[in-house]
Length: 157
Image (cartoon, rainbow, N blue to C red):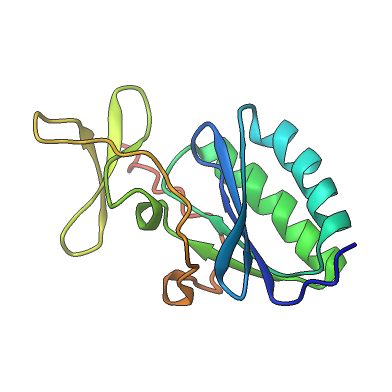
């Protein structure tokens, strides 16, 4: 195990491929991109990461996006953090795709409104879907300790 200190992990698992960034002193030093189901991919990746690094914190995208991917990520990462005494943080998916629409259900997408509320609607002609990207620097101002999943479920009529 490398004796790297100040190691943080960022997990973007609401889309495929799953993106994982390894940050030392908040600077990106390793990128992992893996196709597959969150439930299959995360255990394999974290088995390697926990053997390679001393991890101080893990941040995951807690929404909006795939309900199942968010739920699986939260349960898996929360367990890893409890067992290994690692801090867990959450961040919005909009922070990593330049606020572009995020796939929801069917043909609908999540949009970030100007008042930071999240709306569910169909794409329009002006909508541009940008890929998720790991930032070169981890911005701690975008992280929250309120880590529960943010499903943004539509109201039931």
